[in-house]
Length: 151
Image (cartoon, rainbow, N blue to C red; front, side, top):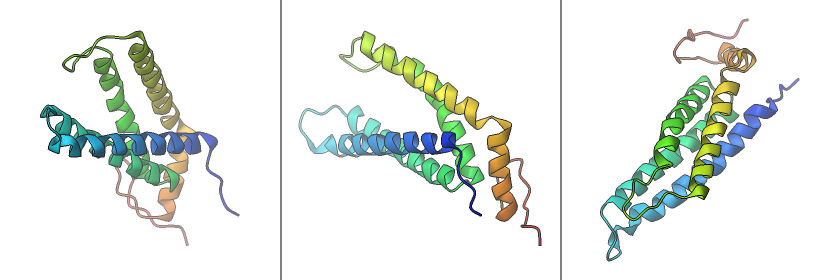
């Protein structure tokens, strides 16, 4: 009998995948824009950071989908980091940027979704699911001992 993934894990994994692909795409375009004339030096740097974040989100997607403990931990911390970043990005920090209602709403929605993801991943039944998978494989994550499957 095959265990089914909870719908919350599936939705978070899909959300991670979409966000990771978008971040990686925008990051790659921005990172390689340095060859264009009149591009400020901070654009390629920002692009590499976005590309790295996109790759981390895609790795977290794989970890969540395969119910690995590191995927749970990586996803949790990515969304913890996303909250202060969302707060910072509500305000104009780039040259020529203005504060808009649309950006503020977008950042508030992102912060709300981050809080929901953190709350869901912190639930005991979700943690048990990832701990149960650790009983079948070797786990080296914080708080989980190296266990083998029972005979």
